[in-house]
Length: 424
Length: 167
Picture (tube, each protein chain N blue to C red):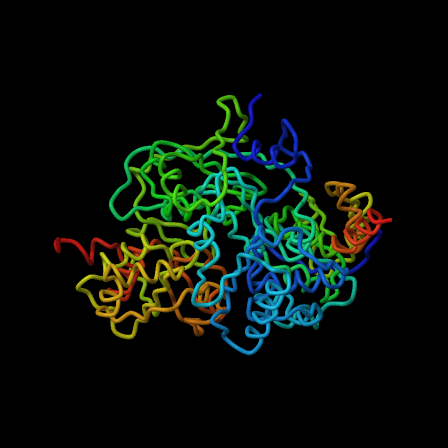
């Protein structure tokens, strides 16, 4: 019996020829990521047991991205601690405000995560990097401390589930819609403890940005990791970014999957996840009249340049509806610069949008757009749990950037065609 | 290890944002987390429970973010263990890593009402609803994870291991 990509990467990092689902292994880690919410607890744990040094300062990436630029004194203290830790430990990849980005957009962009890698991060959306054909999963602060000290962690080899997408994508449909549709189909625990392997001819039409969005939300279906086989898009994306060797891995033809599902993407229109679960997905045309107070376009899910270009296409020549706030957050400094150079900022400013420096900010209800009681937001982020963006009585509707931009213009949840049609 | 306490019952897909909203995560003091346990569902929860009480939930408990304040808030609010039909995976790891035992059991969560007297044997996985006079078997906890609970978490376990390695 052959192995899946996930099994092959885990076996290679555990020094084993073969692993099987359910097996407990200890594996070597290539990259450990931590941010300003998860790392302070990890540092405290390291200090408590008297661990002095990290296993390899070049393999640790620290990004203050959640409550930055520091939203209050507590956030400032946490970031100060992070900064001192990185200085004392000689951490090579520390990204300061002004040179940073939301970690899950930043690490791929900087070529720090590569095909065949085993990556862990103190954040649940660490599964994002699987878009580049590596095994990547989220951990908590104690695992983060253990990984930083020893460079190893124990893993239970997950069973793989395969998701095959075929057909041609409709206009305004992107990776976000495929993953929302999939979570709507299998449920928020539909891939609990599993590896989600994304495949099929429609995947070949997707940019790396779209694949990052899909792998990003694998955790919303309960998955341990999401993973794509590397192809020419991956190669193209990696080529100029990688500063070390990497290995493209393929699933064997006789690899075993717990289940295989297939979707005809021709039948998928833009999707919206309604409160309070990413699994409550509906086609946007079936939503009816839902007025909104705020729109957020950004986050590790949809804050990349491709997302901003899509938003600009919808916003061009339009104005944000009265009494509606549109907040646009480029996910990294590089994306921010590109958006300026390409004239996207001009379009956003003409439309009446607020543009922020990179931060997770409102996605976690931290700052930069927290919701009041009874308010309703459309957001390109990944979670619409109760109280996620602010007051427990606020509501979040998750969508792709085109739907979010169209909704900002109309002041209610809208299909992009309503705003764009006939203009070209 | 045996735990006895009253049951506090929750439903499906209890996420980490309702267990502890991120606005309370901006510290490293676990007692502070304990004061805000289940804030998104019932801000008064930490004041209602007694030390050693047991949390019971349905499917996918702890889904969402990797925030360790979630299991820490449950442990430091005074809950001794959590029984559910299934747990989200990062939450599962985090809980054992900080020394909060979890038991996965398909049928017990349907047969326990809020306030029932519950007795749990972590070593055997036996769950007794004393109030209803019913017994259930949870999936046994792997020996490696039982060690984590005995050592009160991964860091103490690791400290012991590293020390042994040195001598």
